[in-house]
Length: 474
Ligand code: NAD
Image 1 (cartoon, rainbow, N blue to C red):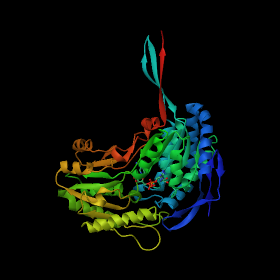
Image 2 (spheres, helix red, strand yellow):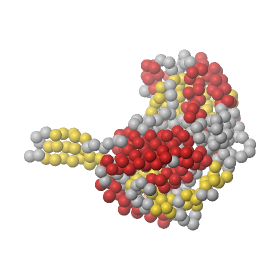
Image 3 (cartoon, rainbow, N blue to C red):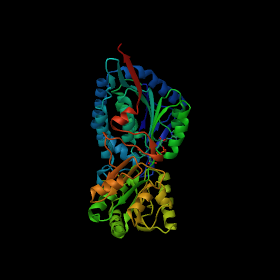
Image 4 (cartoon, rainbow, N blue to C red):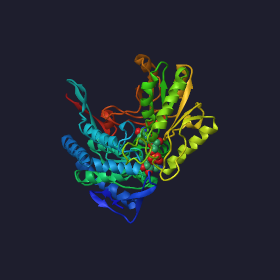
């Protein structure tokens, strides 16, 4: 079994310890990654600090060129990285609606290229006979990136590339469940970037907590659960670190009356079930008008029953296993509670016996707000479909949740859909679509779904501080 090293100061690092990484389709380890202790955390932060002044002072064009070279390396190793992503996450190589490891790699490359091409030109506020006032953007220093297990490589790219593009150096800590493709990416990157610019330490929450508390770290960029996000915010307070938190979601979709059920159902199904529902901005609660409730629920159940569930390395598989046993247990507990609350399972709802963390995709009707499956983020292949009688009620129910990541409205009347969409309490709202993000449009949560945004110019600015320069002329 291959043991992947960490990278510190441009060098591969093995320790006496390693993490066993489990293939969730087989429920057995397939790779190891060297594990960090406090010594490696210290060394990685020191290496990033040492590399910072030179990297920060390098011209924008040369940093952009190196990041384009990195995109090229990802492209050249796409097949290998896709297989690693599938083995560690369980997501199929292609997957439902082509949302799989191929998309993870395609996204990683696209985000790298678009972000490399962004600019941070100073803004001119005033220029007259009296004074010139400019607003400059400066890198912050050392950024610690802490990533989750659902889109491990793409989210690492979302953190690392803008941090580097803006002139920061990075210590990356991937999820202890899925560090393999990230470790390989860091290895490829270290053949391109100067030593110490991108470091990686592997381990669990204790390594993340050590980075959060470390006085040599200037900013934390974190994607993961709301619970951990709150801990990070607490830990970062001691030295007033900058933070970007991309946290959990419980995204609502509202289907307005008069929808074309046959046309909408496959899109709704894909939005809720791609990656087995283990995407922050998956559709997680669906509110459907009384007039089409039965018909749309039945159509979604038909799609769920037909979906091909299996090992993601096999051709044609649409849904893989859940990524880890703990997540499967959460989904099972929510299914049991939904049954107890009178939910009707129109499809699936059972974990499969045998190897791997498989769960048959479930469409559940008959529940409303106030039940666990509706109120909590399920992060799995089980969608509650909730009946409503008037649109005001649907808007109220959609907003009745502490999360505010994404939301969607589905209708053939686009103007009406936009009116409803603008009233949803979420960071991104889609019309006749859900969850699609792009590298040039900001994405982030409101309420307890996060602080700050990623992507585009606004996302890049999160990795900078402002310096206002006022030049008196007289
Ligand atoms: P998690 O919070 O359990 O773990 C995320 C990372 O935090 C891991 O690397 C983990 O080791 C680390 N960590 C754990 N405890 C820590 C601590 N005390 N201090 C510092 N780091 C610590 O999340 P997860 O289960 O890996 O990911 C699933 C969650 O992520 C879901 O809630 C999902 O909605 C969310 N998510 C959000 C977005 C977004 O953009 N908003 C994207 C993807 C996933």
